[in-house]
Length: 113
Length: 111
Image (cartoon, rainbow over the protein chains, first blue to last red):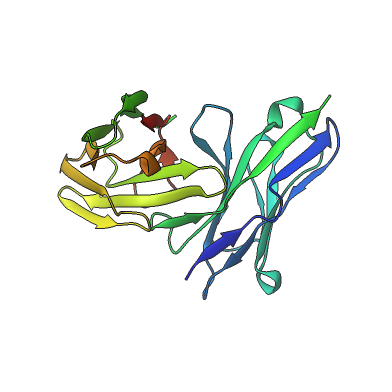
């Protein structure tokens, strides 16, 4: 069965520092991978997705993620965090872009001025 | 932003009462989904629909039913609400080519 783990429940970084959020998945084939962000009281917004091709994908708001098949990982990165990046981040895996998508438990990001 | 609305946005109800949540889209997308969000669990799929009158169960479907009589509307019903169904409910849509787009959510409290 598909599963997604996000090892870090909560991360605190200083504004301007780099960020890496970890995501590991369990799936038999090459999955469709997503990162979503949820600001307090809001719905989820897609940051980026990986379906195939270049394993380094660029998303919105300056985020990028790298698919590493050997490590079953899809970590999210940003070189310089802004205070507005404070939110909950969810990694997700699906068999297709529209099929049932399994979400990780989320990582809460706090940004210190 | 994708045209998705959810109603009501907030609801307080009592144990044992029926509750219906509505998801409405203006995008004419084929696929619609209902998720619940609980701390430590992320989002979990309740039910989904791949067309009018075509629905299927997700991973946490017990105690929930759905209906889709029109492309634009997807209803989630709690036949007899329980306290364990207190949650935030999100609707999502997809055209099958891109990923899912989420609505603003409904906060449900079952007393």
